[in-house]
Length: 163
Image 1 (cartoon, rainbow, N blue to C red):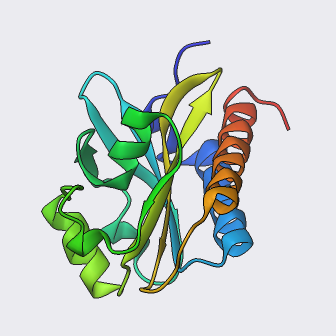
Image 2: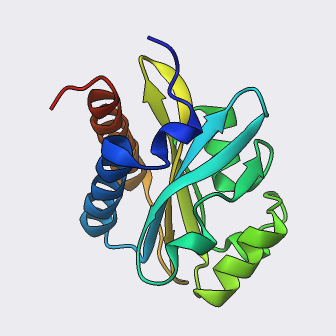
């Protein structure tokens, strides 16, 4: 099967499946926001294709990150769940200006991300964003990885016309 392109999330069944899966993941972990970043290999960028949480989704969806930026880029590069207690203050993780603005506006500091795999290939990252003070231990990071796998499976089944 051809890799799913970021444009597959623009509308229709894939967009609805992604939105529902992100809301389920957000509620399961209890974070303020989840965001799905899909790899556009041709551009070498991650595109935010869906998000769940309060506020204006249009300030997220469509934005892009170079694969060397943010926790989503780090999860894709390293191939496992990662987190930081304060992305705005973490000198090890550069972030895009648009993301800094969103984090400040929504008081999101703790950011975790897990790679999203379709047919065993990393296709993007699922971000879990919350206010200050949240922490993740090894078990919690494993759970994030399982949720990212569930989101990937739901999106892939929908893109294939399966229920």
